[in-house]
Amino acid sequence: MEIIRKYFDDFTDTQLQQLGQLEELYKDWNEKINVISRKDIDSLYEKHVLHSLAIAAVCSFNKGAQIVDIGTGGGFPGIPLAILFPEVEFLLSDSIGKKIKVVQEVAAAIGLKNVTAVHSRVEEIKGRTFDFAVSRAVAPLGDLWQWVNHMLRKGNKMGELPNGLICLKGGDLTAEIKASGLYDKAQAWSVYDIFPEPSFQEKFVIYVPK
View 1: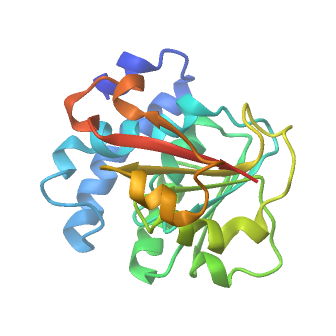
View 2 (view 1 turned 90 degrees about the vertical axis):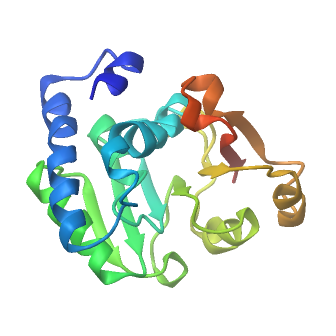
């Protein structure tokens, strides 16, 4: 938790309590269902929670925004973002049912009222539109955009940035962005510039406006 408070100093007591519960919950669930790498579980707050919150450092979401988390896994980046933005609605999707069970149990245990978790590939979600899509290391940028582009509403009133896709990625992304066909639209921020921790070198936030 200390590393979270190093970079954020405006949490409410409820948010601090929710964040503080995550370590024990994820350690417990990880013993039953492996949703986080064994070598990373002791670095949960840095490598998973803080990493997820890099999205918030790039774009603050406004009250009433609706956001879909593509391939949320154990709930990242969706759960940390939902804690930070309690008046924003989050739909967390994943194709693996046991991971969604963990998300549902963690969200219920900490009292998150703004999270819905669904066992579904995001491209199979019907009849829903969103202001933003978020994701962490799920698929190539071009695939992510193809899956969610039609679900995103045009607009610029629901966050600091106009509506779009915001994802966390690592490594040399030049070829991936070029292959996506989004080279002229995509913007990138270094996570290490936002949170200068060694584990965030070569980690990036990528944004594509609708």
